[in-house]
Length: 325
Image 1 (tube, rainbow, N blue to C red):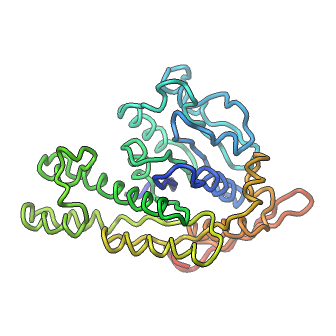
Image 2: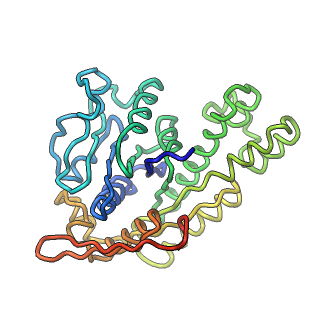
Image 3: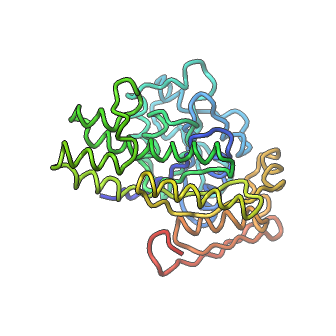
């Protein structure tokens, strides 16, 4: 059953590629277009999302949640000064806050699923550890981010692969022999021969023929969206195309290209000024790029215009379904 709340998780494997900036601006854009939005910083131990919103020292964060300092988890929802947008801060920089155990992650996931909102955006930390991947896999729309550099493209490929194999692993967690094939978190105990979905399917055909259909469904239902950040030219856009082809070839997964954000001083300036670039200048090129991405995620056509310090939004719902334009 589909969750009534749209959970959008933004990940990518590599740090420093602009996930937090894009996630913040997506949240601001969706909130300004009339949705009730909650933005969450799940980069525990290195949370910095509050600074992008101009919030100096968040009054509450997930650390309070873990220390039982608050009775009502909704206390974590902080005002942002942007209509319809609430914010949940990460755990802060307290020692050990990044090393959250699976029980606490489960508590946070339960908290997320019980929030009242139209859309929840999860800004994920870097890497492919289970804490990050499990947040990505609770999303109704998973978004992966890359920059054009080959190192970023390969990290994002690894992130997509890790998310898919983790999804398969959890579906077959009661079958130790299948776990060896799909849980590659510990290579010493894993069967690395099943590194691609093609090899995995053939192993299932040989050893677990009764579960092939279930495996195929898990792979077919996994459809993340891609955003390429810091694009300078047409060649940079090819990096996104190459990533789509890599994922299709080795994982047999269709990734939807949602759009790109150009490299721009407007974005850097907005970070320094702690104002989302979409709000600072909604008619700049990066903001136009972002509106296209929001349109692809929400199946709408959006246009933001700023006049006399106020932002006006025109919104038209597309007749086609899904993420297709």
